[in-house]
Length: 217
Image (cartoon, rainbow, N blue to C red; front, side, top):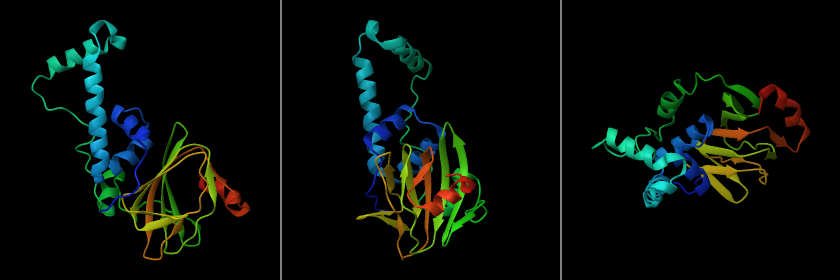
């Protein structure tokens, strides 16, 4: 799997620190599981954080952090270091991914038809973040839309264009309030994506705005 598009360093740092809600955590965990470059970035962040903590004088460590770490190391002496970059169990096989992460099969998920050649499955909602899967047929053009907050889209199968960029299996598209785009699925085959969005999508055209309350995106 050749991965070109990655989440920003800020996303990876929050992931390394465990600062994300479950939905964004799940998308990043799946990407990191198949992306060696992002695993290396997370390991570097973890090492850097550990070195900075060790460099702090005991009296200057915030909130007793040094004492907490010392106590943990004593209780787990000799144990292997735990890294969030390892043991994630992700796979580039989409059926295995769905079984591992969603405890289902792809076809058994509750898909809803939301347009010609396009189906959507809502998975969860937490703290204003919605996780859903999108399944589109070759050549399908999605409506132009913007965002009320952050959005991470992980391609699980197939590929789509956004402007001059192409996103293939394993790639993540990192969007925010400044992003307005119109994804177009390539003609090579079906495209399946896992996405997490903050807030509602902002559609430019009337038809998708009318349908939006019924599909919940």
